[in-house]
Image (cartoon, rainbow, N blue to C red; front, side):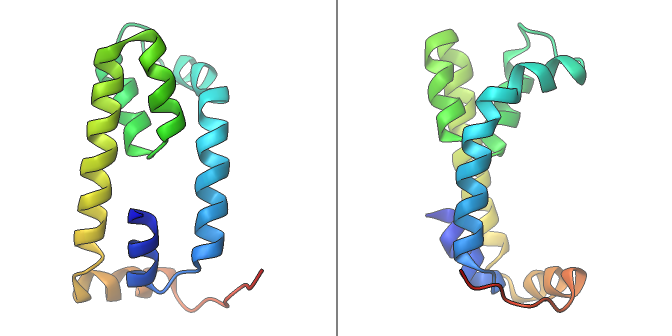
Length: 112
């Protein structure tokens, strides 16, 4: 829901956004342990790893946390919600939208 609103606010392609969100949501739980080990996040540091999971807006990864640590799942859900709402609010501010569009530059629309 948040991705659709933000994509519309920024003039993005919702079809591409949907595919990227699904792929990242599926890949994150698969590669999470390896990536966290590579960047040095400790196994019991649930605050860091689960705020990162929630910030990535991965509901699948957050749901998987229910099996391991309820505190982690709560932090993941909270950070996912807060970041989603914050992103929608920020993409509704015209000067910020123009800044993002200017940073990205002109791009062609890919239709699927």
